[in-house]
Image 1 (tube, rainbow, N blue to C red):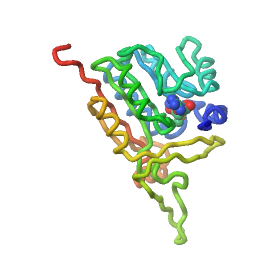
Image 2: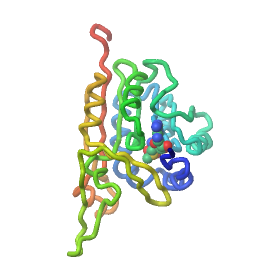
Image 3: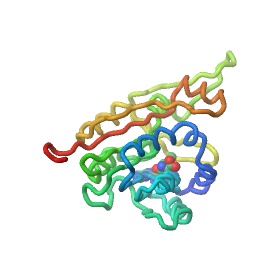
Image 4: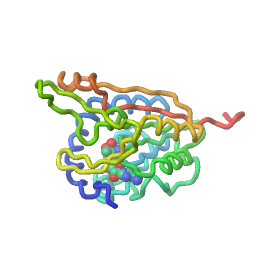
Length: 241
Ligand SMILES: C[S@@+](CC[C@H](N)C(=O)[O-])C[C@H]1O[C@@H](n2cnc3c(N)ncnc32)[C@H](O)[C@@H]1O
């Protein structure tokens, strides 16, 4: 079954022109880049790289980046925009890389799109080097528990955000700007349990808010933070430096 990404590719590419959409430019890029820079970028895998914007950013900072995505049209665009880059049409559930290949694995708003999260987490852990980091930007579970309705107007003329069935994992079709894709809602405990079970150790967690931009957007983010950023480290075996 399609998840809508191939069909939505051209609309998605349009939203990422000029340096990314507002959420990326105002909320997520800063913490994602700060964490990536902390470790030196090295060999990086971007899982669900889309049209490759974050790969290009990391490559411009000296990283050696591979981007993977199952949507062929997005990978074609990534190759067009970055002809020297390494982009492959493949899903996160079966990564075509040897164990311990990467210093940094990035999942930038792609875990919400992946149906088999358990397989993807196991693969991302497998291809990380000991001492390497998994950097995740994802929808906050409180936010995705509102799918597909989100903000609503109340009869009193105010705006309310409806969260329901938080503990029930599910997928919903969501749409914006000509894009229509299947997004997964999962409670935070689903993500944490799968990541902890691999032996990864949580090193950083934040619910980033807008840095700059329209005050109304910043105020909505304070009412309902849409995102979270987590960084996990793959421990080195005892005695290994
Ligand atoms: C919201 S977009 C994010 C793209 C990019 N990371 C960015 O931030 O611009 C989600 C991406 O996840 C990809 N995706 C969907 N299913 C996937 C899977 N099974 N494995 C890896 N990526 C997947 C989609 O094709 C899409 O490009």
